[in-house]
Amino acid sequence: MADLKIAVLVGSIRKDSLNRSLAQALEKLLPAGVSFEYARIDDLPPYNQDEDDNQPAPAKRLKALISEADGVLFVTPEYNRSVPGVLKNAIDHASRPYGQSAFGGKAAGIVGISIGAIGTACAQQHLRAIVGYLDMPTYGQPEVFLQAKDGLFEADGSVGEASRGFLQGWVDGYVAWVKKHSGN
Image (cartoon, rainbow, N blue to C red; front, side, top):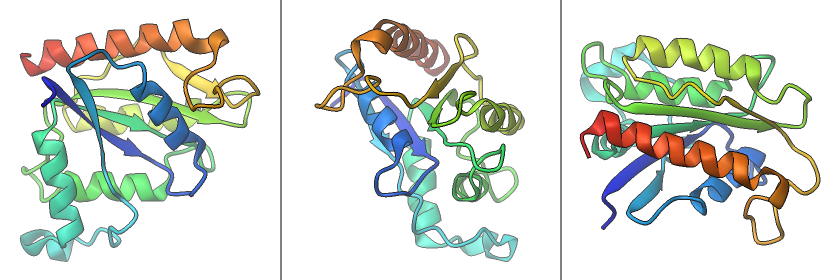
């Protein structure tokens, strides 16, 4: 069993998601004793406050995964200069009902990849505002706004040589951040 568990919320449910590929590439950079647990968000119904007293099973599963994790990594694409609806829906489910958020105090990391030149900068800024409200200490620097280009990923899914040092540094820094805020 890993010493440190990080819940991963990938904001794209697309079969060939670049952001899922990024999460899996980052996972290969984790040190021993740290693991990723991927949250399933594609089966969550639209959030409905009327269901707060009896949340749907997929929402309960998501909240349990986050509650048991030491940190939460958000890996998000950018849709229309913001957070994808499916990711926002997952956040709404796991943070409700009011006063029973699974996110409070969890160390957050935010990364993303896009085909656009600015990566996912706007979506990440919106997400930073959301996680700030959720009382999540968020790893701030360096920010990771990746543009999908040839060579970013190797054939085996690992990070390409040109970006490996930068992303390894980010992973190492984020893991230290999670340890600091989880008490591990």
